[in-house]
Length: 153
Image (cartoon, rainbow, N blue to C red; front, side):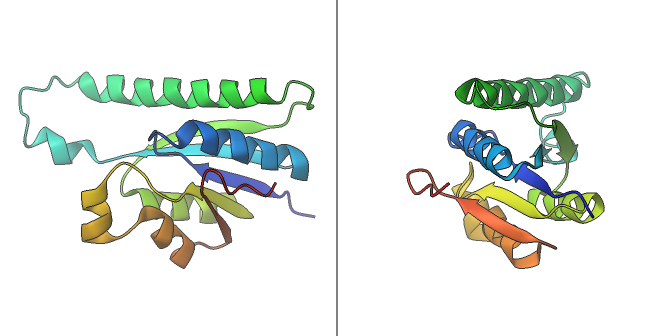
C-alpha cells in the first residue's frame, strides 16, 4: 500500500497561516503526512534590475521563507495540542510556483495538493493566471483550493 501524502503550497500571503492550520487539521483527521512548500521567484528576475543587491541576499530570503513556514507550522501544531504527532516537512524551492508545486507533487507521489484561493500578486493573476487554477488544471492528483470561512473539515 502506498503512503497517502498531502502537499500544501504556501505563498506567505495573509491567508498562509489559516491555510497551514487548515491543512494541518486535514492531515490529522486523515492520518496522513503533510509537506508544506513555498516557492520563491527566480532571483535572476530581480537581480538584473537591482545590481546593488548583495549576493548574500539570496540566502537571507531563503532563510526568512523557512522561518516563516516553521512559524506557521508551529502555530498549526499549537492549534491542535491533543492530537498525536504526525510527519511533516517544510520545503523551499525556487521557480514558477505552479510548475514547481506540480513537479514536486509528481516526484513525491502526493495524493492531495492544498492551495489558497488567492495570493500576493493581482498583476500576476491578470497576466499569467492564478497559481491555484494552474495547479488544479495540471496537477497529477486531487487539489483542494482553500477559501477562509468555508471550511468543511
